[in-house]
Length: 373
Image: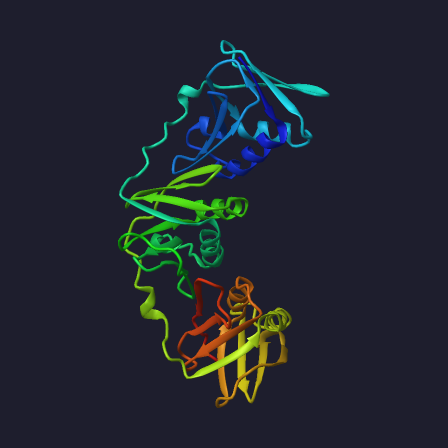
C-alpha cells in the first residue's frame, strides 16, 4: 500500500498534535500516531485518553484506504531534517514494515496494527458556541498563566468559560490572582458554562495563531469538541461548580493610578532582585503623580527602590504585593498604559488596560501582602 505526501506539510501537522502525547502512557499504543487514509485524505490522530487531537491533509497519491500506527517520537525525529519534497510511504500490511522514500534517501520503521488504538467518543450535542479564533486565543492567552495547580480544588485548575446571551467571559484564578476577559462580540443561545483543563488550553494556544475565521465549540457537562479549519480537539472537561468570580472583584475603588506598563515592568524586574526571596514582597507607594517601587530582604541586608512618573492625584497610599505575581500580570497584558485601582491596603488591587481593545473587557486582580511598617 503506497501513498505520497508533502514532507513539510506532514511534519508540521504531526509536530502540532504530538504535544497531546504523554511521556508515559497507560496504553503503549498511545505512544504512536494513528494514520488513516480514505479517499485521498490522510487523517492523523494523537491521544492520551482524555485529550484527542485530529488533523487531516490531502495526499498526492494513494492506492487504497488503510489504517496503521507509527511511533510518534521515531516519526518526528526521522522527518525533522527533511526539506520540502514529496515523501512516498510504502506499507506492507502483513509485516507492518513501513518504507519511506524521499529525493536523497529513505528510512524504514515498523508500524503497528491500528485496531488497538482507542476509538473516538461521539461529539457532545448539548451546547454549541461559535467565536472567532482571535477571541478564543486572547481568552486563553490572558487566563492560562493564572490557573491553579490545586489537587484539593481541581475546578481551579482550568479556564472557566462563562457563556451568556450577551457575551462570553474567560476566567481563571489560583487564589492569589484572578483574570477576567470578556468578549463582547460573541454570545451563546442560552446561559451555560464549562471549565477547560490546562493541557487542552495550552494545545489551543499553540495552534490558534495559525487559524482564522470562526471556531465551533460543542460541549456538555463532561466533554468538549473544538472544531478548527485544520484541527479538531476533543477533551474531557473539569466537572464542578466554579466560584462566583464577580463577588471577589472590588467595585468603585477610590484610588486610581495610570502607569506606563513597560516602565513598571522594568522597575519590578530590577527591584525584585533585592526583595525577600521567600515572599517576593514589593511595596508600591503612590503620591503626587509618582509611584515608588521598593523591596528589601532583611535577612541579607539588601534593598532597592525606583521612582516612576504616573498619573495620580489622590492621597498618599501604600500597598504590598507579591512582585513576581504583579510582574506576571503586567507581562500578560498587551497595552501601553495600565490603570491600577485600589481601595485599601488589605483589599485586592485591580489592574486593567487604560484603553481596552475593541470588543473586549479585560481585568486582572491581585491579592495584597501585609506590609511590616
